[in-house]
Length: 207
Image (cartoon, rainbow, N blue to C red; front, side, top):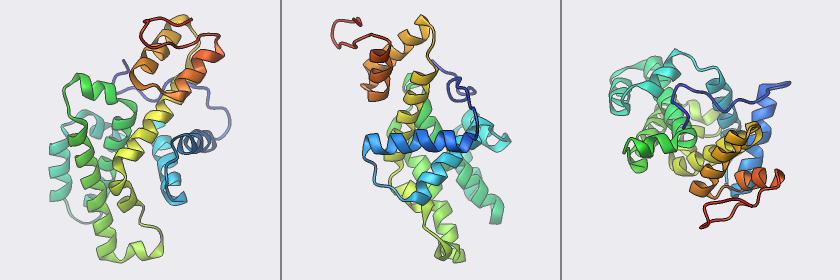
């Protein structure tokens, strides 16, 4: 199991990291058939780039109680409030996608986590609407709030794809198989079959 202070699975980021994540996210959107705007897709790619090199506020989101962070964000004002809400929404979305198994092990309900993330994004969107800033472009934060679970599932698909690409050793492939048993991810199944392994449910083995 990955720890919360880990980034995405080890990958070789040759060339432009934004292009790399853009391709992975685009593939995941097509695989899941997610109806999303180009602006939201671009935002999610930027989120992954940011979390490849998390800043202090992002790391805080991953390590402190979500209710406390939401309360602090709502008590702040002006630009600080917006940035705290945005960062909280980003952090919760990232954790929901990349570390859902960690949340489950801790007994944290996914519905609760999603509600915190969605509320943070919706509050950020409301601030932009109040200021009139949303008139200059798509209301990305409102879209992320309304489709939070779908975007979390999208990031889970991205996490699976990255894990599949990074798997080199037999031990890593075993983790890929265990993850496939939990999720049934097509990306993980493809990774297994590319190594000559046919994933089979119920037998506890691969062939």
